[in-house]
Image 1 (cartoon, one colour):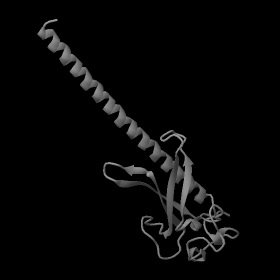
Image 2 (cartoon, helix red, strand yellow):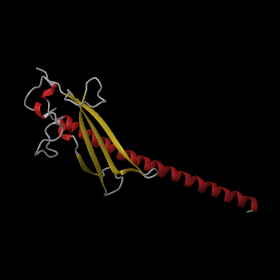
Image 3 (cartoon, rainbow, N blue to C red):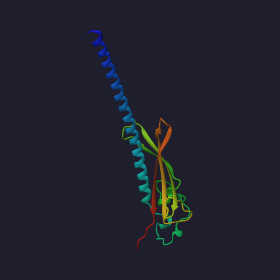
Image 4 (cartoon, rainbow, N blue to C red):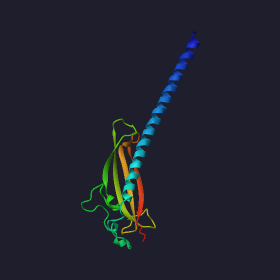
Length: 177
């Protein structure tokens, strides 16, 4: 082999090394994005399950056994009644100021043998029918739940910011005779 062939061979090996390094870097970046997407999907799923659980309850403590025809008959205080503990809440506004952690086994193998812990906080308010994005100071026919779900696994390493899934739902009282 002469010097020219040797230089072409070294150049080809160098070019192959650069390509292999770039492909491996892109695979690692894609794998990291997929893992974060899986964690966020689990957080959205946990929030959706929590909202579905809350909306399966009675609208208000006063509507559990009676029908209401005037919104002022709803409970003026939002929150759990004395003696109520999660998960034995009986009406929607019991979730007001709820804070809890939910352990989810990592079924997606993001971290083998690890447990993902999602922290959940909840706020419930009466909202007016005309503008459900504002909070009402009096009882109305609708309540809004703002649910926040986060986890240490949802930390963005580049910006060092905690990511949080925030979901809102409106729950209205309807009674048909």
